[in-house]
Image (tube, rainbow, N blue to C red; front, side, top):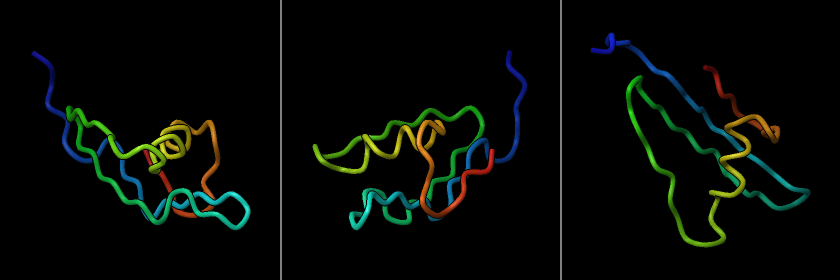
Length: 68
């Protein structure tokens, strides 16, 4: 049995990613608790291809924060 961990594992607050004059991710906020599985889905051309590299820190956010 795995121990129960309380609190947030990941909290994203007002994350924004811009490329020149285009905003790809606009003030996105997500809160994920420990032991939670999530999926990020959306229409083609949505924020997904920009959001995931930003979450993994492969790309820097323009604004907002991602405390772990």
